Length: 505
Image 1 (tube, one colour):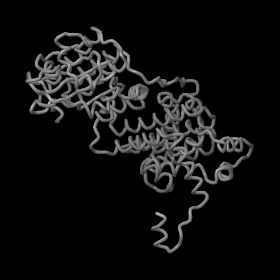
Image 2 (cartoon, rainbow, N blue to C red):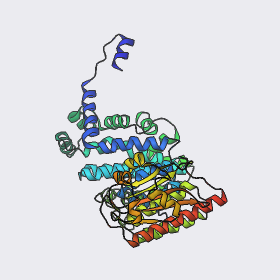
Image 3 (cartoon, one colour):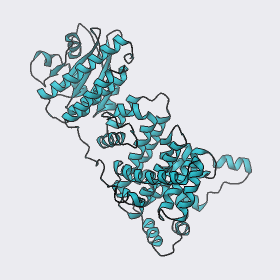
Image 4 (cartoon, one colour):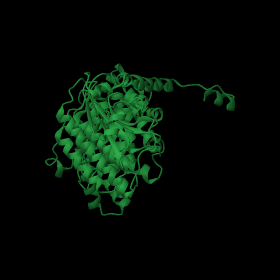
């Protein structure tokens, strides 16, 4: 960029001191303070915009993180996202009902809040989080009232309008402490204080991070052209103005003016606009809890009529990364959801996603995998995996099959029934576990079951607890059998109705 500028103008490109300082802060935040969020933001936003992205692909990403899974399901069952209040028990179902882009945006919000909550308990950070969540809910509400087809994108853009401020206040740095102290002095001017301590404004930091992390066109438009009359940009900007004005009180002159502007925007009476804004503030406090930001929820200013009604509760807490435990209630919920799905002409993928999630989360397996049989029946290859070593299994679970050299997979498909294979020993099943299988998966017991359509096997479901060393007992096997039976029953239904087809090799 510098060279092209010099060639076109004949003038050396000079990088200002302000630009250098800003670039240094972007680098520090991206590399040291929030590296996971930056990479996650890019990946999630790319996935949401990719026309070839599938429910299965996003579900696999979410299910790798137990805290993310719990929060997605909690949010999917709130009135905010699910006004019909029909229970949602699986991540795959949440993606289908809410939409892939909406769930991608929820993931991005969860990751941002989780990163910030873990980084610091600084008062200014909590205040910025509360203001940002409130702004996002108000902006989403405005977008929905105006018939926007993608209100979740408006939500995320409004949430990230202050991402530079939030990122800055979660840093451990001497200049952060100095600016904090300076802003605490009576009559302090925030813009002057930022320029004095940092050499740039925190709004500039937001713009730089939005560009560095590729946080989307709508956010960039709202940051760089906030006076544009586009309805989506206007929703983002007004949402932020409303949240900032509410900090001064719901009876302030600023709120009064914005309410009148909002009423005019919607073509509604001021009383109706007032109620919508008040309801959105209440929703913001509740949804902040579901996102795991209960401390931020407590600083969102509530209108008088909701101050006694809204109870701030902690959302699902982050847990140590481990292995999912068996949960009979989750099993029942997912089995119920599978039965409901089968009665509604499901696709093969929709059924498979739900069964796999039930085995992984409900039965509590370390690894769960579906492998598809090639049309010539000579290759068994992974198509979908959950749990530990997922990426390795997707790339390396690939076994050639030969009737002259029978193995456990061929045996299971020939018997057309689930098998529980015990580790070691000299049983018939143990002898069919070839070295190539133990070399890839490790030594230990596992479960396999063939998927069958019209009495012909199309692949197998595999599940184990080898990485954790936990026992696979008879109860676990019975639950596995139950889920696989539902899968095969659903496949027969799909084949008869012609509603879907198996995933190709």
